[in-house]
Length: 224
Image (cartoon, rainbow, N blue to C red; front, side, top):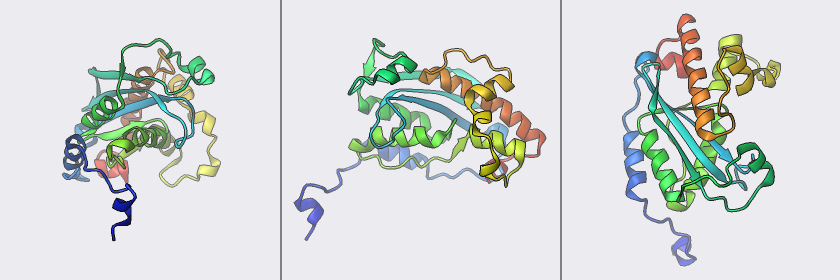
């Protein structure tokens, strides 16, 4: 007996846009591909808090980096109507009154379209990906399957080597604000999804230049 079906827990058919996303990832990136030829999607989410199981996405921002150049024309920022008003989140993000709002389906469709055949990049990117999975869960989306690169980890690795001890890292020295200050990146439009994605994209380009000088020149080198 199919107990899941009996109690209404059977999996819903995947929408076509999720199938298209998953199909786009069937072609793997060769380890020998030069970093200069890779395509990145740099993203950020602004949320009601830091609990990936209870908090909600307020906005999604992203911009593409191709051939080590930021493609400003690809920048986007989408807003979800908050399910509840979190006063502390509103103080930081300032999102009350922003228009237009999009539906959760529009948001996850846009993200998956942006993500096709891209390496996903963010500062503490695991959090942002977990929050996007939360948005897509009700549409049958379970897991972001792209390769992911964290600018926090990359910055520490470039400073301390591939096999650094995380316990020896002073995490505040590698915050987005501190790294932007170190590399002379003006922290404009901070704490908005599009603004933080653009800052992170600038940081990525600078880190990739340093990586190249250290002999990290292929996809395999970068992700290994």
